[in-house]
Image (cartoon, rainbow, N blue to C red; front, top):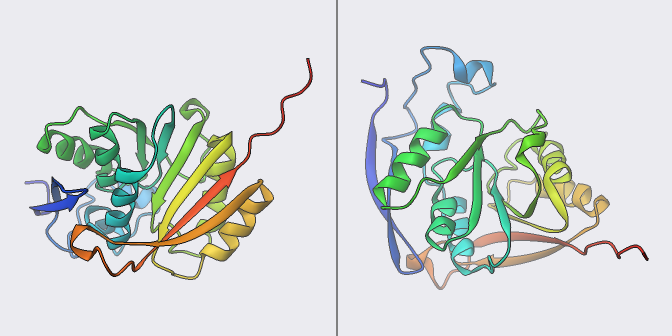
Length: 224
């Protein structure tokens, strides 16, 4: 036994059912080798990756609609990876990343559960540069600004991995840390468009979710 229990659920995104293995509840915890502790994941935070949060459903909906043509896409803090699975089904060039030691096996299992090819995954800590990851046209994340210091850490990830004309799309439930993140991205040349969106197929009329869409114009080409 792995030391934790799971259950399966099905969620609709763009009219298509996605099956997911999730942790049974928020009380699950198993860190026998101390991997989570070494990465700064407390027992209270350990189960969070394995839940399907409203902002994660909203990000998946946004990825069902967004233009993916010619874009290399990075999901930060992917957790269960629903948004990356939606992108994988659409044929996008997507890389999922997370810090949690179980994010990769859960993502692989969920891809197989939906008869999809495995999603390219990289283990990434926001405070540790990862030069081999490269640069991206679109960086996405859901509910990643839940601690005060996350704004600076996430802005650092964007600075290292965003191409000159990149976009950043964050779904945020309004925890109060988006304002400093926005200021940091403005210093990098991004402009914010804020919009409301349905959380999922069953919530089509409420538009309760916040989508923070940052766009940066590519710098002018230098004369030859």
